[in-house]
Length: 406
Image 1: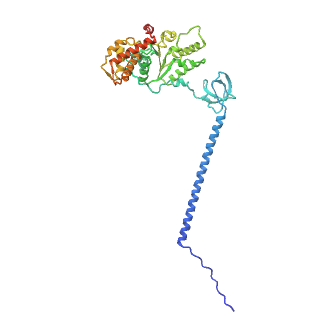
Image 2: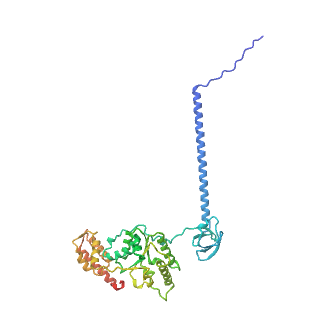
Image 3: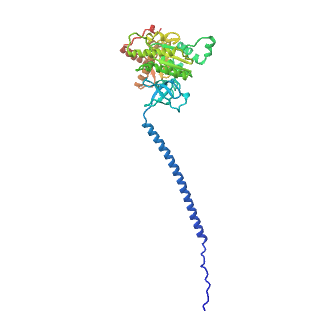
């Protein structure tokens, strides 16, 4: 009879500490990798959302570019909450529908609006804008010309400052006396005698908005354009008040009105009539002053010269002996000179304008440079006067009668 042998279970192997540490390290690395993949997935999902939004914006832009252009018009009248009367850019008047998302308070007669090209329905309200030529006429940077650089015109400077600066800086003085301050001044005189230079000095000295415009810029080709620019010019000045408007060469639009004229002349006359209405119309100019300049006052319309429009007419003649001496001293003070006799030059330049005196100094400097010298002598100035006289004789220029500017 055999004996039963007791069977023992196999012995379990016990993991060593090194193996445990290895497994833990591997597990930790897997956790880090899983977390990194989760972060990458989140970042990619965020990028996908951003790209979808960008694609949506680009699709919207493409649709906008493919959409038909809008027509610019003006509201004439509001009939009710849904319909209005508009005038399109070509001048035709229509009854159209209003976009219901527009705020009623923004819709009023005269408002610029964008119209659908097909239905002419009002799509959106546009802000009022001035003509680029008008808005660009505002001087952002003041000129560096001061009154000290306007030599020989002391009396004229005082008149301009009293008529233009004083009403803007001390309006209470006019209220105490009980008078209406001058609206504007007209500078008349031969070319090159300092009319524009004086206006630059005013722009430098005053803190008011300075708007300069040449008269020829207001003479437009199409009917009504010149008058519209005049209205916008004064509207800009009133919006930016206190302001000063400088109209150079005003004779381009201010010539006398004649019975027989071409269509172009009639358009210039319409522009003049709009200017007359703005200068002395129903709407007060208040803190807006006007400076105009011309060298042909004889052709200006009488309505432009009457009191109430240009209250002061300031004559700027050719400089006399004292004025020529002051102008020559001003220009030679910044030059490197040697043994010059200002009085001799003054005697030789009778009838010269301020611009011609400046040209004389420049020519003398060019003569010195041509000879390789760094200083201007009296002979250089005398030779410059001779050359300028030759140019004037060759050009056939004769002095304008001073009675023209009296």
